Amino acid sequence: MTGSQSDGGAHDDRLRERVRRRLLLAMAAGLERFDLGNPAVEETCHAVRVRDLPEALVGLTIAQVSDLHVGPGRWQPRRWREAALLVGRSAPSFVVNTGDFLQWEPDPDRAREIFSAFMASASDQGDARTFAILGNHDYYAGLDMVHRLNAQLDSIDVTVLTNLTTSVVCNGARLSITGLTTQEPGFEDAIEALLAADRPRIVLIHEPDLSGWLPARSADLILAGHTHGGQATLPFLERFIVRTFARSHFVEGWYTVNDNPMYVNRGLGFTGYPFRLRARPEVSIFRLTH
Image 1 (cartoon, rainbow, N blue to C red):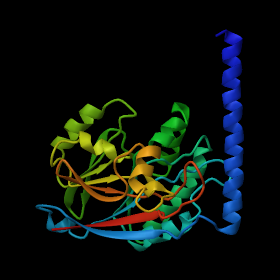
Image 2 (image 1 turned 45 degrees about the horizontal axis):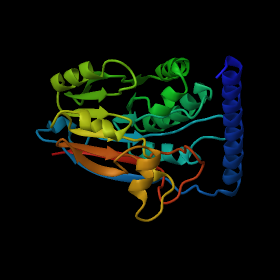
Image 3 (image 1 turned 90 degrees about the vertical axis):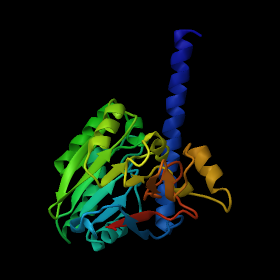
């Protein structure tokens, strides 16, 4: 193939992608106008039993949001304000976001503005701290966009844990929060740091299949996103749809992997198409207990 032919093919691909995005953005605007494919946010509440949990941490609350997928134009979670109010109502000690802030290449400032609403709502109820990891769609936007997104999140005091563990003191007791990804270097070292960290250990991952890489009983709670619960599913086809489109063996809810408990959140936004069917957007609330 000649260089001119190759350049022409690449140009055609870019043109098709631009047309596709414009059609999807137009569809998003139309569905928003008529409030179609836009089910109410579900708040799911979970008691998490942790062995040898210090008394000072009993009742500690973590609010999880995921998969905002903030894109150009109207491409954003249509129920994000409702979700932010639910987060605030739970009065969490921590707010965590398990990735995919971005869809395509929007201004990261918009993702920051939307996510800051969750933080503001939580802060109205107390002094919530916020942690995050990035997801595959954040990296699809390119490394320059990743750097800009990290800077935006840092500007509002979101701690992005990219293969890092941080130790946090809450009510005089210590716990550890780890963020893991294979999108950037340092995963193996991050696992070693996790194994040396104080318990209880909370692990944030974006793609739930990464849980299979964690050693047995290394985490007290793993929080993941990515799958959207299938986003648009049919009865008995949820696993097939998630495996086909998200390339995951997990759908939603609770799993045990290598003796580590993991919860897969359905997220709030859209990818592929701007609607949900039989997979409501979700905010999940976790309270630690004996």
